[in-house]
Image (cartoon, rainbow, N blue to C red; front, side, top):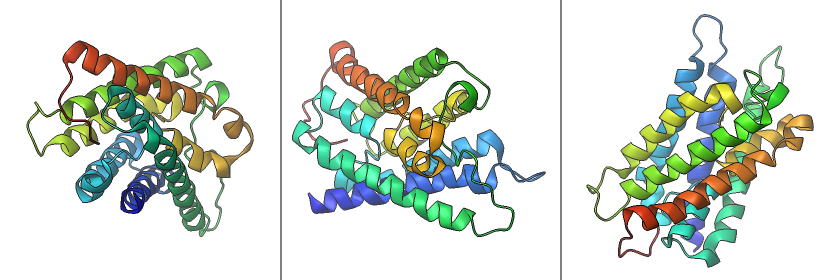
Length: 234
C-alpha cells in the first residue's frame, strides 16, 4: 500500500502543480499567455504523463472522484478509498503550497483566485450555481466513462493514458469558462486553501458534484456497457 500511496501522491501533486501552475504562471501573460486552451492541454498532459509513469503502481487515480467511480464500478476496493483520498488531498495541498512559493517570488504578485474553482461571482464568466453544479456532474460523469472504457479489458491495450489525457483536455476546454473546471475535489481543495474566503465557502460544490458524477458513471458503465472480469485498479 505504501508504494501505491506514494504513486498517488506524485501523480496528484503533478496534476495540481502542472495544471494549476499553467493557469497561475502562464495563462495571463499579456501577448504570450497560453490562455484557456493552453491550461486545458496542461491538465491533460499531467494525467497522461503520470498515468504512464506511475499508473501501473497505483492505478493512476489522482482524483477522489475517480477513486469513488472505480469503487462504484467494482474495480477498486472500497477499503482503500480513505487512504487514497487522504493522500490525494495532501498531495494537492502540497502542490498548491509549492506553487504559491514560486508564484509569489515576483514583484507585483497578487494572489487573486489562485486557480480556484467557483460559481456565481467566482465563476470565470459568472455562471450560476445550478449551471456549475450540472456542468461538474456531467463532465465528471463522462470523464469516468472515458476512464472506465479506456481501461476495460475489451479495449485496445496500452492506449488508456492517451484517451484519458485527451479526455481531460476536452472537458477543460468545455468547463474552464464555467467553473475553472474541477471534476477533482483534491485539485479544488489545494488552491482554495490559499485563496481562502469565498473560495473555501464554495468548495462544497466541488466535492459534491464530482463525487456524484463519478459514482453515477461507476454504476452506469457496468450496468449499461458490460462488466469485465477484472476487479483491480485501472
